[in-house]
Image (cartoon, rainbow, N blue to C red; front, side, top):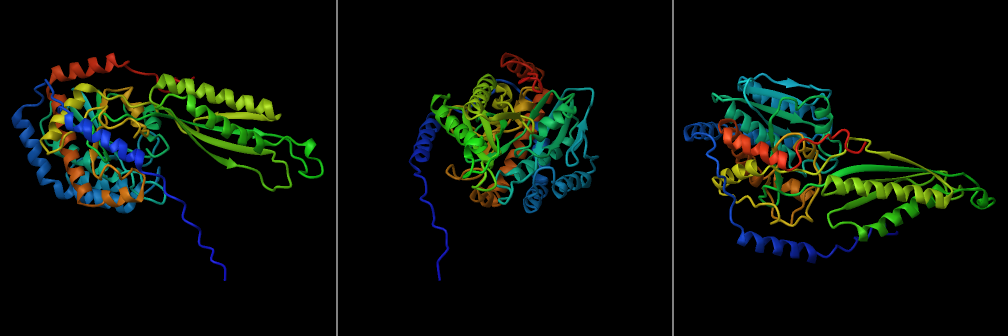
Length: 441
């Protein structure tokens, strides 16, 4: 009997990861914690919010566990959003579910609608097969806990809880933004699990590129000279993109898969499709990279006698994350109160970068998207190992610490007009509002 057990591939060396970790440790040892020069909210208001957060810890942890168990993928987060809504309603709050074109979005509001408005943003979608390996159940719990801690306060403005579906690969926030979901919001904040506490970790802009080559089918043996092979075009395209990588800026990423490659070896392939994720640290360099990939696609078509059809962004693209400095400093101070040191940008190497649809929010509205440590640094997001850690007491603590940090940062912003002015000034200095929908037009 033949043993058909697949051999285990050799594991990549961990030398570079270990070098990055050593670099981070050296930088962190020399890091001076961020300090805000703003007064923020009055001490008595902060104490009331902290007291409410403490009484709601069991609810926050229970919500995290429930969303973790549901582990629903993009646009299908029915039970997850219902869990958030049920907890909010149990505390006496009105909730809207399914607004602005997405059935699993959520909105709740507290405070004065005629004052400044801050949004606390929740995510709750999971990944295929590996569940909450990005920790979105903790994001949902932290955001909901922050809203509940603030909602009974006599606020000098308004706080919104905005539940946003389909972050993973589907740009749910951009879909909602184009439908007006964030209209009237003056600042937006959220927190994301990670292997480090970082207030300003880079997130790359991301586009999707699908190239469909059409050739001429022919008998691969009897009349190959009458064919034009679309699979050859895809093969050359993939190789050309690989050669391009050595000339790209260090932050750029291009990774792809062959979606269609023919049907039978005896037929010269008529149609073949390759798909790429295209990422860069700046919107301008993402635009340049997009142009280079289009040039490759058309050049390969000419070389192989095929036709290239190019489709950009089957789902909306995401732009690089922009972190607001004054808001980030308030977050860092409040995390220090929870026993955490929130590192600034540049401490954790920028190589450890992914993408988020919150980037599109951050170039419309002053925003922060700090990372909160759940796992050891060597445990990567989007792995079963991270999902396992995120379901432990370490995940619970991150949800609770995140809820407090979000609540106190929002409270500071609502109470302190000088902070709000500096937040806006920082936003304008970084480029102000970007026309996201028209950026690549």
